[in-house]
Image (cartoon, rainbow, N blue to C red; front, side):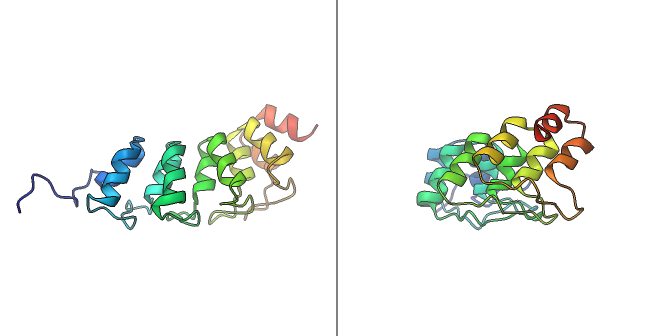
Length: 171
């Protein structure tokens, strides 16, 4: 049978139809592609981003939740730089998604990328004060953890000039 298009088509960034649907938040399209359209969770970008990681990067909690609860994805999936869904949520300031991943016990605040940055390091490095506050007050992060360069949350916030974060960490 002849088809108009092929499921193997990719964008210039290496995204398949499944990955494009995840990037733009189209849950029903993601579901159909995986159940009936011939897509698989093995589809990744050239830099190792899975469907779960793309949905996380673009803050599509409904897709992340479906992928983890029903779609067969794992919270342990990592890209080429060692980022899990939790670490991407921290890097992109998606506090609600980060809280859901931690509260559902699918992820741990101890997760770290290939540079040994935890969610707290990433939040402090970016100056995401509400995320830093939540991680320390409610999320179970440790203020004394250092990354591969020996930098703590305070030192990262200071290095990148995030005054409010520095001030709060020193209160």
